[in-house]
Image (cartoon, rainbow, N blue to C red; front, side, top):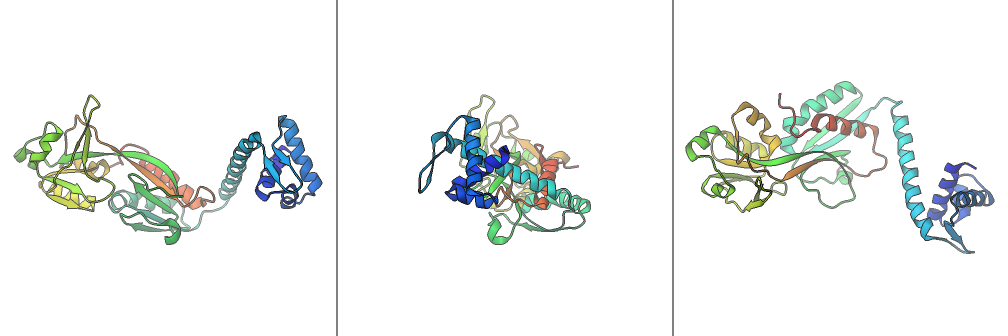
Length: 301
């Protein structure tokens, strides 16, 4: 008998609570549905379900087999949907949420190329530094950087960025280059107010020993683009995500501070409301995010 149908009848019988109900889902009689289930058990040489007059009880083997079988059927369903999607032209609205600085610095070219390649897709981009509720706000995909709050939403990791300290050459020429994290206490510091790069400033030395400083910052902002501007003016040492400073570092208008030390990583994720039924447009855009940012630092050329 059809192994796939046997698997489907088994999962449905568990979910529906009866073999007859599972049969109705697939247009089968209760007797035929029972035969599919018996054939499956015979092929495995193990009892999956203990049948009584009023209910079905999973055996230990049946419980484990049900979990695996359900995942297999869901994966196959998603594969079928994706295959069908790829035979159609992607179209309609794609709603994206992203952090202000990352989105304004790096997402524009990615979205422009995406829209050029898929001319029937319309994109709405929301830039904000708060965690949006995807379902309540009608967002298809959110780009998030840093530690994620617990939720039922599905996170697909794109890459990691690093926190780092840097400053302008003019500032360091006047104030001197710190040699160790403790030296930062005598400098003017520029920090972030928020969850992504919250105090303390953290470093790891070449021996793998962590050092954390509860630094007193002369300037604090909840926007890393403003922190970058203040640092470029020679105001002090700034601590934040390396992607914010990538272009300035490449141009030499900022230089790394404490380069012998490493700092914590910040993961970049693409967030969708659920793992199932992710629309084709969203899957295509996640692929573009992986292509564009699946390296340590965005291309700054």
